Length: 114
Image (cartoon, rainbow, N blue to C red; front, side, top):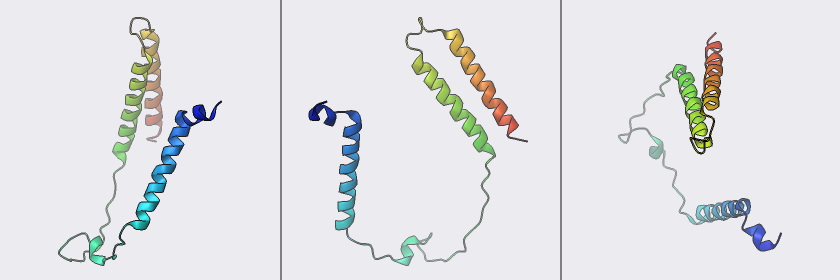
């Protein structure tokens, strides 16, 4: 491979872009004005009230359903993209594969509730 063709590959261009952006970020951090670190800047209210930190519980029950929805959504999107021409692709096999993935994920979800 010639040097010009090596520099034009997507991986090389991506690495060069990362290095350039990181360099610009570092230079910007060095020349940017420094903050004074005022305590009031990090207060939750501008009026200066000091309130105690509040503890609250996060309900994670809906995360299971959100995860299942995300899996189904991604699988459906991948299946749609992989179909190509709708009249040529085997629709029945794709539908059966989707149903198998659906049943497998539902069994995993229901097994995790025990």
